[in-house]
Amino acid sequence: MSHPSSTAAPFRREVRTTAVLAAPLVLGHLSTGLIGFVDSVIAGHHGTTTLAAVAVGTALFWLPMMIPMGTLMALPPSVSQLDGAGRRAEIGAVFRQSLWLAAGLGVLLFAFLTLAVHALAPMGIAPEIRPGATAFLHGIRWGVPALTLYYAMRYLSDGLHWTLPTMVLGFGGLLLLVPLGYVLAFGAFGLPELGAGGLGYASAIMIWCQAIAFFVYLRRAPRFADLALFARFDPPSWTTIAGLLRTGLPIGVTVMMEGSLFIVTALLIGRLGEIPAAAHQIAINVASLCFMIPFGVAEATTVRVGHAVGSARGSVGVRRAAFAGLVLVLATQALSGLVLLLGHEAIVGIYTRDLAVSGLAAVLLLYAAAFQFPDGIQVLSAGALRGLKDTRVPMFLAAFAYWGVGMPLGAGLGLGLGWGTRGMWIGLIAGLGVAALLMGARFLRSSRDPRLMAG
Image (cartoon, rainbow, N blue to C red; front, side, top):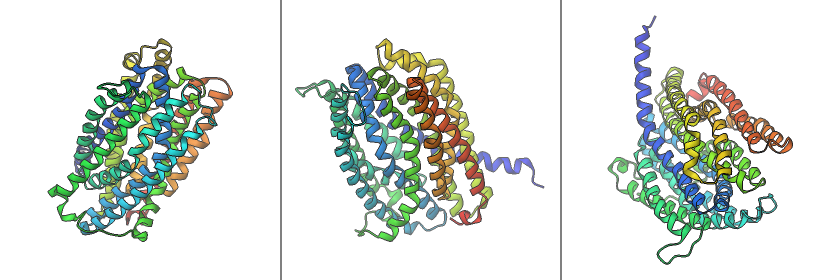
């Protein structure tokens, strides 16, 4: 019979390893979330209509972006399993095919955003919001091809346990966006005042700078030299790309199911007018910043679970990696919930001076505090399942939780019964709660499946 200390010591080491791996990812995701924060603050000071336009434009941008972002998440478990199995020589070829996939997804998404602006009126978006939302989308769409390529490069690095570039380039982009967004939104140095459109163009320029910087880093960094990432030109290999799609497309759909719950909620709230839309944008931006912490831990857990599978550590090693991530997520979500409960009014004051907007946004932050634990548990469970390359069933579980429970309940309460924004947020809480239960149960089952343990 094993002594408790003999099992506790490896678990503590796993927690430390996951924390070290996750810290740059968390900070990198926070920098991404702070991009929305910067856009919202600049837009809020430009005017309530501009803030509402950025809210709708951001929602329409990220709704389709969830698919390529999630699809490319097939790369970290693929890379980490190859690395864990001692097959690093195969990583470069897989990465080059992921670039073809990323480029194709970027072109498709650019075309979608070009056409999406024509849907604003049929969707019932308030007339005063439409011009700004259109301008924002016309600006930010130019950064989409760079963003999909950036994700491919980032996920390669993350899958090899090197997450520092995600943090550095994330905050580097943020430092560029702050002055550039202000100049283009308000007009300075002889440039015209572009409002929401200026924030869209500023975001696109920042994304291209990040992608170029990551490309230069991967070419020159000794850490990646043995992989020969850009040593040769590989034409598209449909077999490899199809393999990435088999793993990644269900991830993309799963990510979209959750993300679209929030995004469609924003679009439905946009029908209620600029004050509810602006208040929702503030609250969801703060909630998104909180979410970046468990999201980063979940990505680190994907890598650790994938590495455990590749190293043939069995169910014990896989569960140890997942539960280490869970400990970290529970701790960080408790802190986030406490901050929202105690500081909701002060946080809202950073965004706007409009009393009607700030009053509603402060209430919504209390709802955000309520879903911190279920949100953290569901994203951590999904990350652990990705490490096992178990992505198809979780896709259906997510569809049921978010669109079978969350959206019908939110729309019924918010629009059907007239509860407005508050009713929509109750739907968010319910959807995340059901997802946490289903995803957690799925991981407990999958981590005992010998077929998945074989990678």
